[in-house]
Length: 210
Image (cartoon, one colour):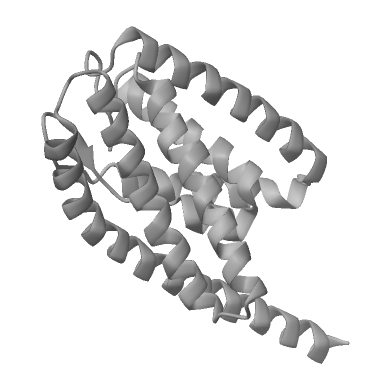
């Protein structure tokens, strides 16, 4: 899903860069409104976890790659605004220091994963939660859809740029990311279960100490 340099035409990478910059600016504003000092360690831990997960890449088609995303997990645990900033930061570090994703394509990669991926995860999880769907199932579905949405957007960008025919890239992306999305859904559900049990244990401990 990391798009390298030279794979997008000028109109595509400029457009996605502008949209991503606007989205991240708004996310930063919203994050400052809700963030407190106790949440800062959680942001760091989540960033490190997602960074490690995204560094494991699978070749997909025409030089692009697939990997775990982490958008749903960050969104569910920390909210969509913080999640967007975390994913974008991870992508920027990978691009600048590890040549994982192109610098000119950074706006597109951020749009696909930090904006669209996070947005889909947030809307899906919120909708399923309102329907009283089990939180683990909601997390799994949100994670799967976020991965598929980001992969679909990357396919459209590559096709519009004339790099790879839509039928070729979409088939390859959909096939790989269907499996990657299942893996991410399982990881998301497991981590949510662990965090929920840890929080429940902490609450019981606090009650017993009173």
